[in-house]
Image: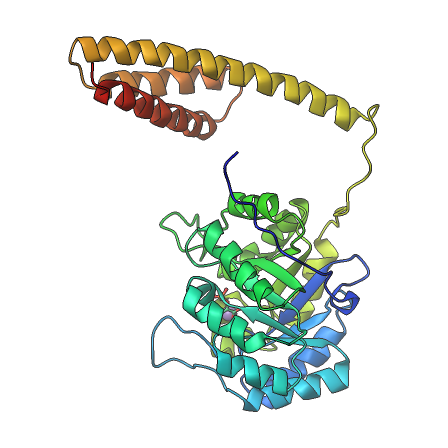
Length: 367
Ligand code: PEP
Ligand code: MN
């Protein structure tokens, strides 16, 4: 396969960031608003045993101007108090070199790069340069656009600057198709990140995916089911009065309830012996996959012949009626075999794209 595998030199995240179930649980308000609000949230979160890191945004990237843009350096003093009083590690978002200097000066324990910043390599490089020589864990949220390369690129820039305690956060993507969420989760992009950078700890931020509180539980469960190593969830003592992201924040007590309803999963896995049912099933799956690939190869051979024929008759490659028929027929056949319509449709879209590509090559060859 001709893809460039990223080579990151990583060290494990500090144990202090993980709870008894080995999960990194970051919680706290979207924004630090007042000293009282920050300390009250932290004190209440201290009672939620799962939480290991206290978050608060002190510089806020707002979509539109004239909104609350964060309390600034003042908030860093409040975070120092949180750390002193509760022993929780503290985390903030950094978006430029100035933020990094201030965060390091005030001893913030964990930094994260926000989704809008990850999308901009100039900003990420500036942050990386400012971090040179520092030994601080940094989490990188996915970029707002669904581009895994940009996400990996940000991790690489930080790693090149000597940051080895890195993590990634899936917080969803700007998309037309959001299914009721604020940001489309696009789980396959997270799978791709883990395929390319298997050693990166990946956590999920259901707050920014959901944009509202009602989906937090189900998204958190899904993240754990998908082997993610932690969660970032926004909490506020009085969410309705929050100066940013009011709709998606929950009270610390509601967070405790959310955890009580979560089914923990074994994220470390188990050794799978050849006799294990899981291994047997995987073997069966491997054999079926080979059958699928052999069938696809035969299909592409037929496509080539069709391409030659269309060329000889000067026909167009794309024939709308035929394509409509193929989709309807295959979806119906799929249904009779117990396959979801969208699954079959998606597969045929990919197959059709490659068939068109092949025929385009044939038709444009000089004869
Ligand atoms: C946040 O965590 O409050 C935030 C601004 O997140 P994101 O970068 O995911 O939008
Ligand atoms: Mn927020």
